[in-house]
Length: 133
Length: 178
Image (cartoon, rainbow over all chains, first blue to last red; front, top):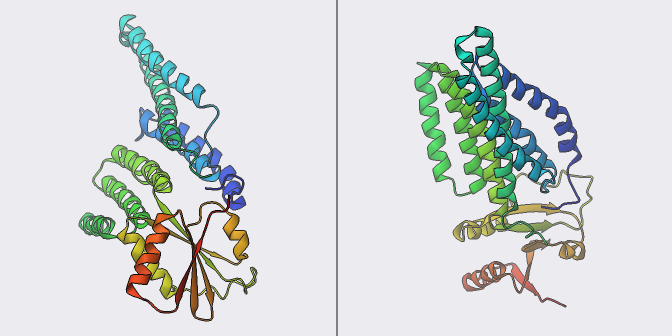
């Protein structure tokens, strides 16, 4: 694929669709505890942002290392939140904590899945990359 | 009742995806299969699974397959028509050139993915571009195929043509000048 030339139509459409995908992804994540959806599905929708970016600009990402770190931080945060919630006995106190806990876990899972799948996708792209020239 | 209709359509798309000779079409059939199965999940009362299927099956998996096909051996065929003007597209007929179907058969036999580009540029300009495998030019019902010497798929195509002695085609082999 040629690096210099990319379609202007695709580029314009991408900037129109970007915010829609983002809003839909966060909607699915945040309403996960009550509606169909949840962290995993919402995170997978957020990956579509980076994938559509690859379709328009077929280059590898510079911020991939940041996403790798984010992935690991989210994994640790997930375990910590669950441990703190259980061992402090917050699940016995009130319903408010349950709602906050559910939403927080969904957000963490969403960000982890989003960053993790993006790292997987771009690593897959980069393997045997640079064969164009 | 409507579920059964969609089950039948699902089976049809699955069979089409398995039996199509071109990879790109198979990927598209699989994406349609995923979208339809997501709809069937909704009908059967599993909206959560439907959302996951729709996102992963018809978006992420499709893009990953397409990216994999980009890495897969793509056989780039330029079909040149130097006389034509770029702004008049009517001449690009819907029917395929007969030579193209022969080249496509060759590609399918060797498990290559044919990518055909209609161009109106000059031959020398195309030759400077990287990545082309075959350039086809047409001069009054006579086809001229240009291929590079180090491209062994193009050379195999030339050998096959000479073996079968098909008329109206001549082959020009480019040598590397470095």
